[in-house]
Length: 144
Image (cartoon, rainbow, N blue to C red; front, side, top):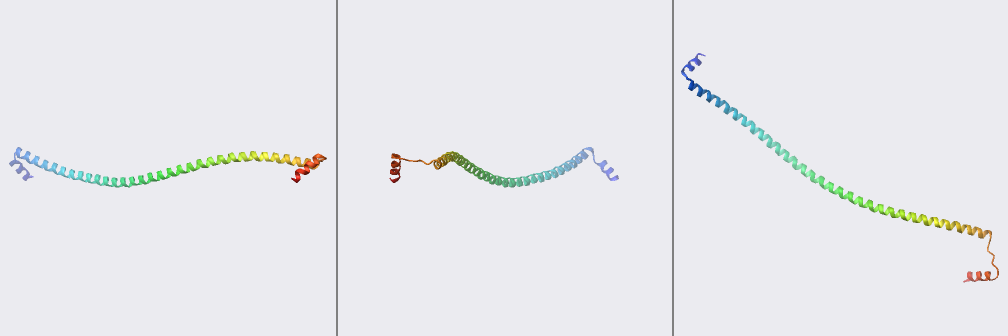
């Protein structure tokens, strides 16, 4: 402490103020330099993160392109299958129409058949007896 007192006695306020300002500027300068390196570290980290993000972005863009291609393929496939379904529906309607028509014809044929069976049964019960000119005409038709 005595050294400090002797030193203070020799130094006036002006010199003391200059020394104090010099010490303070050194402390602030060192603090500024240290904080600058932390800023550089932060900038380096951000740049590194940015590069990683860019790489990930590139990968994702490639994946998006693949997915877009797949979407186009699936959409095209869906459209083709929709067209095929429409064609099948049209064919099905045509078959339904033909089925109804054939059923109608079948009903007509069944009616004709039952009428024919009735006539045959009637003829078996009551055969036609031809006499005279009717008999001669019938024989001529069968011979020709």
